[in-house]
Length: 222
Image (cartoon, rainbow, N blue to C red; front, side, top):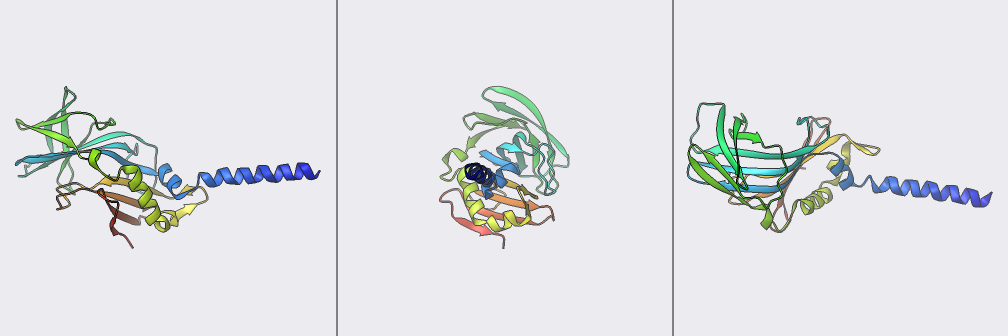
């Protein structure tokens, strides 16, 4: 009887241990990532500049504090030096010699023209964007980041653990998380940074800005 009781207690302990393994802060974050950028390209000339972020994002993309699955994405952002009246513009994207015409729609908040190429980039591709007869070669900046996306997530989970788990319910996180690269031109710095955000079910948004150079925390929501 004692042996059976001890065996039962051991099985319960193992069960709790397995449960605990899946409920770490990073585990909760990874289960609720609505956008995770892994690769970042950038290029500019006098008339326009482009950024291209790729990784995984929410299938039905909606910033509402709820995570709904994921799919591959490659978000191309085209920013014009001089504004045009059209809500849509066309460009040609050439990836490893394969050319395709895309239609980009303006984002009313950032005034950038956006299109999702609906694929994941490895970072080894050669990418060219042609707009209004002008060609622009994009460079993979993320390959030179001293702090990659995984390291940025580790830092964010450590620094923002209280905000991340604030809306935790047992093994679930009533929030969604985002890891992006801040646009090189839009942030008014000649550099790029990691930005991790957590948006909970009460529409409370908390963010942290992390250096891609040394992993230092440059700004954080209180």
